[in-house]
Image 1: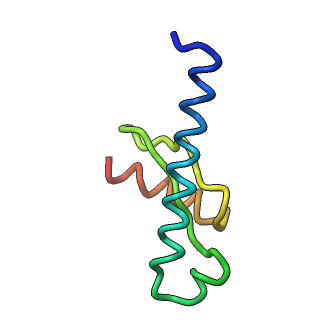
Image 2: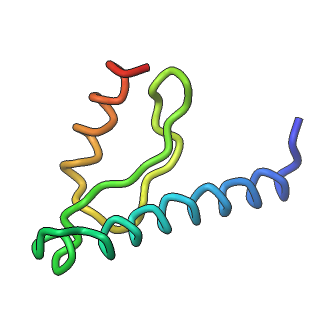
Amino acid sequence: MASDIELQVMWNRLQSVVDEQAQALMHTAFIPIVRESGDISAGVFDEQGRMLAQAVTGTPGHINTMAESVKYFT
């Protein structure tokens, strides 16, 4: 079993991954609304399609849709 410190380190790394994912989406977007308003969603999922982490930027409505749609592809 992982210690509290190990879990916090893993959580911070996971959160960094999704935040970088969101920034990459915003910087490479072709549509201005994505770049200007952050109209995106970014997350990390496990093998069963359960969301493990989501980016702090983005649109909350997209997160639920993304989480549900990922389940169909796993």
